[in-house]
Amino acid sequence: MRRKRAGIDVDGAGTVSARLEAQFAFLNEADRLKSVLRATTLVDGSRPENSGEHSWHLALYALVLADQAKAGVDINRVIRMLLIHDLVEIDVGDVPIHSANGLAHGSSETMAAEQRAADRIFGLLPNDLRQDLRALWEEFEAAQTPDAIFAKSLDRVQPVMANLMSGGGTWTTYQVTADQLEQRVGTKIARGAPALWEWIKARTAAFFP
Image (cartoon, rainbow, N blue to C red):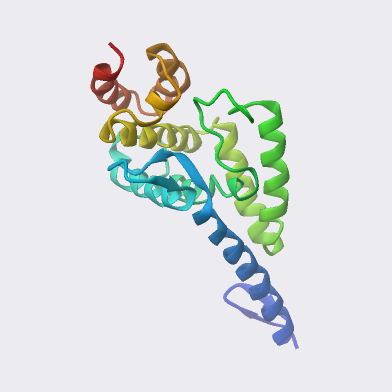
């Protein structure tokens, strides 16, 4: 006998069990994001942050800095995007935006690797969740909707703040110039949160004389 539970079609215990197996397979796989170390350190400079911490911190950024979003941005969707945006790093690793070695940030090689990772990781989910979360991830990557543009802006803000608080951080490591910071970071922040970039840019000046 078929019945519905929590909006999901259930045909005996097996269907529910199979769905939970898939959901927990994804959640257990996502735990590996906590072991992916990023170039950016914690704000106190004591150690590198991991990508799980980064994703959580960005979700909190969206919650606290919601007043910096342009009209029409759905902060709840932004938070959802930021919670999943770096899951592909489980397979690909962190690709620092200022690094010139190995995989280049935003290169065709990197994007292809991330698509393969998305296929595998989101593929662990039941069909409905797979389609929903994969579409949300693709939207973030494309950065064309108001929600995704603001999410991308925050993704650039958080490492800047870590560098400011840790005495230069990756700017020193990768010998970043003011022009590079403006092109690779500032333009992305300003696109979704222009007032936020103006406030932050004034505080980066001491690091780029």
